[in-house]
Image (cartoon, rainbow, N blue to C red; front, side, top):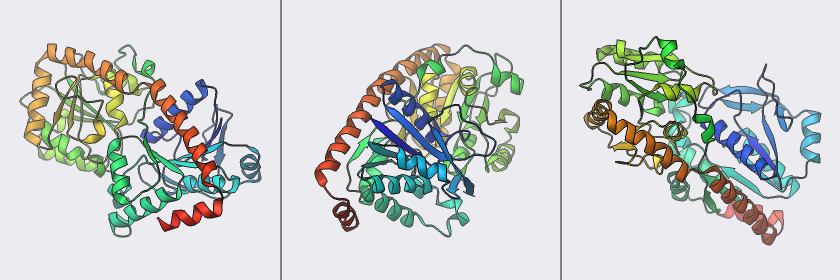
Length: 396
């Protein structure tokens, strides 16, 4: 089938949504489907994929990911959208480009699927420190957008439950984000240790992600300050507005020399960054799935994470991970245990790869998505005229 992807964020931006879209497109094409991507134009970046169509855009807001708005549709854009005979439109995100995908689907009278990647009510602080848009407003928006769609997907049961609680009535299918496991089966090239001049014998507790309030990285710094192990380093691979705050917190807790901020890495470097670490730690409360936790598991890292449904299937307590309550002392205790026991780290390391491959097999979930596409197309044809469907969507 021919599938139109409309995405609010894409390369050279790097985040969980981009990784998910990229991996999904690759897999769909391996099954012989044609996928066309419509994404924001990023000045200076050139695509190698001839089926990516860039729409002139501007950055409306610094966020995670950055919120991009289309300036206009060029004549070439309009011609391409008009001429391509999609069977279905699949949008990723809840921004202007997803709305453009909806408009395209309605004009072409084909079904529209939207993937909810983000718990937007947890990110309202980006807009005037949360004074303009409140969480309840975000919930209403998600409910409205979700009910206009023909179907939706989420990367986890956690996000599906959120949508159901908001009042979304459309079919919701859980399709977890997956990754190419071969990309994370790399040799150790000490890329992280070289950048930070860390000796081979020094243990590294790694976390990855944008340094943002929503990631709850304060918790990691506070937990790290409680460690009995005084040789391990806590490394934040990422950049963001919380850098100065986290640095100040580390200084206040007298661990500033053991908390390091190397900045962001290119996506091609990330597998080598994981390979340099001894343990992966994560404590975000706002993830819909947590792609970085999956990447860490695929890289063979033992995990210490907080108890959150977003990590279900990738962090199994007592198998490849310590899944800990949101308690600083408990988290520190588990970090100390895994850092002090080499045989336990080795056992959890092997198990992490097995757990990730078992629960997030790309082939399995791509086939689930393809079947859901076909099911949505069939249901769309049964439901009849566009006016009837739009009227019904507003009555939900």
